[in-house]
Amino acid sequence: MANREFVGLVTSVQATAEAALGDLNAATASAARDGLLDAGRSRQVAERSLGLLTMLAEKTRGNLDFEEADLLTQAVSGLRERLAQFPEQEA
Image (cartoon, rainbow, N blue to C red):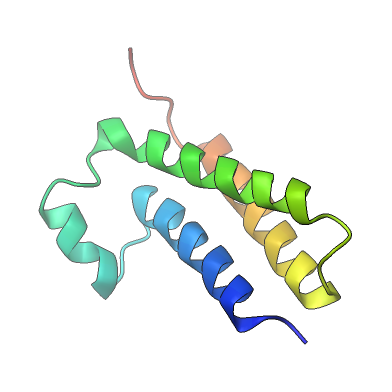
């Protein structure tokens, strides 16, 4: 059975990245309105979140149950796919 705190951690980091990439919900709409998710920072925030999830996957490899490993794998692969479609920020 998946650990609730682990699931919460993964989904929280994933939600941060998704919000930065434009998937707004009630919790992130105010951050966007306040300019915290501006286009110049969006990719950076999403890449940082992906890096955290990737590190978590590497450090926990072999220590997760099936549900936890699947959740983390789906989060990493989904964010990689989204970032591949997100425009590069200009220098």
